[in-house]
Length: 211
Ligand code: BG6
Ligand code: MG
Image 1 (cartoon, rainbow, N blue to C red):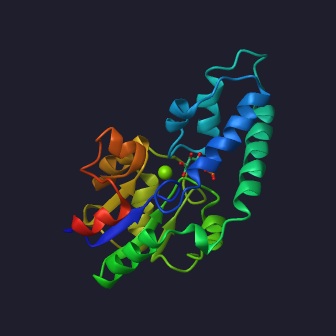
Image 2: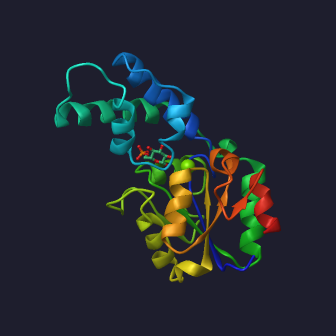
Image 3: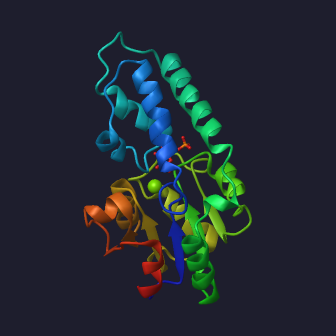
């Protein structure tokens, strides 16, 4: 690998919290009588909480919601989501992900998180990685979410690295776009790899060792 650092997305890359995001949004959408499925859910990957809700509301046919009502809805979704996360433990971090991270680190590569999620510290703590990464940039230190490159540029800055020396790992098309906008190459996994939008399109996390 020519890069000196890797910036990992969290949900859908390091751990599979993306399925709980979907289930929590689905419960809220059902309550509001809005059609929502996994294809629409793919558009929410990497997108901030409120921007995700705006995408879901594209199919809402009821009385327009006030800003306060929208905030209340996103808070309700987040409460449900966190309820689903409470039983997560280090056992939810796969051996493949942990062993690959350890191997990359032993090769001298710096490792960071670049996630739109405000729940990042909570999730890292649940899966036993609270103190693992060299830098964490997340939804709590940004004003613009992916596809804006801010979260990755901050991660590079926290690492003290030039963005061009960082590789981004993402499952979201919005995240790949954000990496390119920040002048970084991107390795795609999952949904993003299916659409072959990365510089590298991987079938599994440990393929990072072959780049
Ligand atoms: C991203 C997820 O990691 O975080 C998005 O891919 C999610 O689906 C976003 O909306 C914000 O998450 P949170 O935890 O701050 O609601
Ligand atoms: Mg993701």
